[in-house]
Amino acid sequence: MFNEKEVVTKILDGDTRAFELLVKQYERLVFFVVNRLIKQDDDVQDVCQEVFIKIHKGLFRFNFQAKLSTWIAQITYFTAINYLKKYKKEQTGAYPDDIENYHFTNDNPEQLLTKKEVANYVEQLILQLPEAYRTVITLYHLNEFSCEEIGEITGMPEGTIKSNLFRARKLLKQKIEVYLKNDSL
Amino acid sequence: MKKMDDEELQKWMEENRTIKNMDGPVSDDAKAYDFLFNVLETEPLQGLPYDFSAKVTRKMQAETKRSSELRYYITGLVIFTVGMVAIYALLSSLKSITAITPYITALLQYKWIFVLAILSFLTIQYLDVVLVKAKVFKRQN
Image (tube, rainbow over all chains, first blue to last red; front, side, top):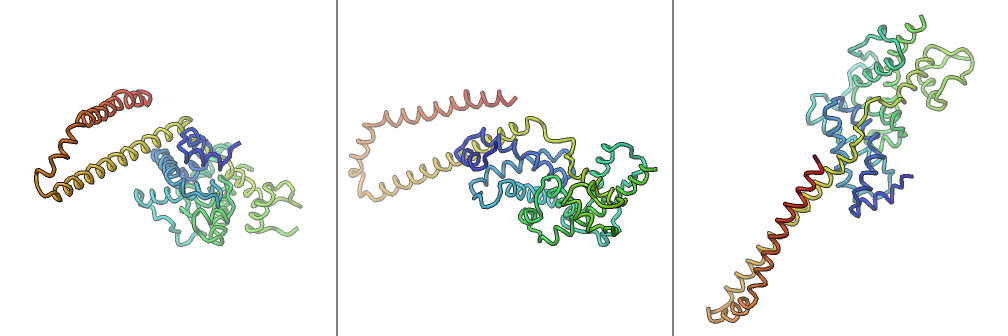
């Protein structure tokens, strides 16, 4: 079983195998967040590497007051956001004016057949959502963080997180409904 | 049973994760949320390469080595500078050449120790480059 305290202590003593173990333990968490926020396959691996190097450099500051996963997710989130600010034109944190009438670009559910394809379709829809929505959807559903933990990670107020989560799901549900109606015909 | 709105349906899904236990006929909205929650909790098919952790560890080791080498060179430079300043201060504080003669004589007695120390340092640096770094480079490729 993964023992956070033991692994962190070993890493601070210079044990590289312990660091490799930490990377294996949290690479999925880091990948999910980076992959959803950056959307650029070529850069995802580099950003994930950067995250773990930052974790290694800053591990001495981790004081076990929060969960290690929350601390790692926080570093991941800010690294991805900084990357977006630096290299992308996308305005981080910006919302469309009228989110209720938000339009997705490749909106063609009629052609979908299998559940796997629908999953890909939903993934594409998520990638078109505003960054704040993508973040909460990923941290809540894939990484299984609570709204309170997402608040610690992103610095967003809990009310905003809940509202973003609700609106993002509602938008996605409306698109899926079209597919389900077609499927049942 | 009254029809649940989006907020109630999302709350139901968060608490129960399925629409199976819902009372009465299940609405299209409920089915859509059930489907959506399943998809949202499905991990993406692609991921990081299997040797990602090994790659990161190698990169981290290289960065650590680079920063420790930098620290080592800075320390060397500081020691050298401080030494030079100390020698300069010592010499300028002495009144005449005759006064420093005994110091120089004493230093010359130990000249081989200084020569040996410099040679050892250079040999260690050379072996480090030829043996250790070449081995690391070979392993990475």
